[in-house]
Length: 292
Ligand code: PRT
Ligand code: ZN
Image 1 (cartoon, rainbow, N blue to C red):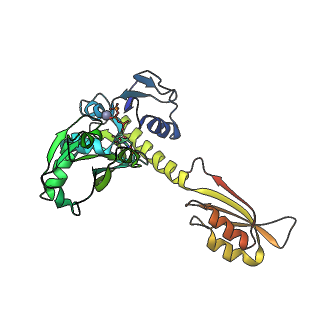
Image 2: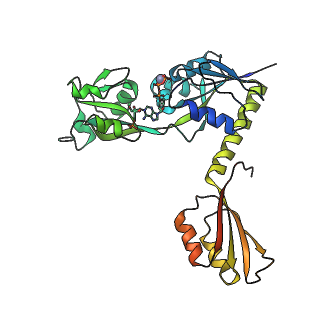
Image 3: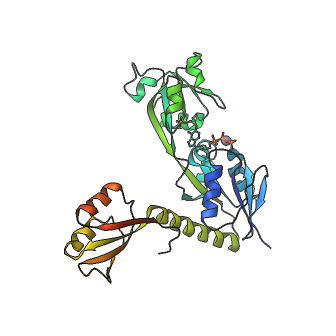
């Protein structure tokens, strides 16, 4: 029987989120622990656990059909293959968000990007840096390191660095200041271009489930009791979503019960506004699954 081969990062920042996404979409995958391949329990699907850098190559070689990687990796090492449509980006995923930034010990004398002309920059992303600066006619001397680039300015190996930043605390800990963000990145679902009818229908289904689970995560269901006199005002305060249901209460005829599916987060401020308008018993519940 044909099996789908899906590659995710073996052990790193993307591992739990990638497994979580597949599980949220209904695929029962046991904890891989040290295994390099785990079968899905309820679907003909094998999960390959690889270094993230190798995932696109497995797809190019036809060993895997699909994978999850950061855009930064594709942009650095597989730009040609993506542009030549040998690897297809199917969907952006809501994790792995970061930016690639230039950082220096001091921003003194660096007001504009062109002020970095001639500087020595240490990075694990030489291609992205060269390309982005080249488009702006800026030239720097690039020192390519495979990791730990933050140390380079401290030991006077480089003037600055170009690296991934998310919270910025690593830069701060090394006395570096984020100066220019050159690229935003997040995880993407990638696919081989040589799909069978079975793998095509799998990825179509998975894309729909991912979309639905993202909508569900952002949505919530709100229920409250409202005085009849203020129903319209209360409905105006409810954030987004479909038209609410308004139901009579059996005991208190001066009130109704309002139920609504909202497509935005219900924040405390909204609940406080509802309360001021006379709402009571306000319940906000998460949505586990949703199909529109
Ligand atoms: O072993 P393998 O090759 O599979 O893993 P890896 O070491 O190459 O990758 P890993 O797990 O570190 O990161 C995988 C992917 O996560 C990256 O390619 C990005 O797409 C994404 N990502 C998101 C990040 C970060 N955020 C991030 N903050 N990757 C790395 N970092 C680093 C950053 O460089 C800094 O040194 O984490 C450090 C902390 O960042 P701050 O700014 O939060 O302090
Ligand atoms: Zn890697």
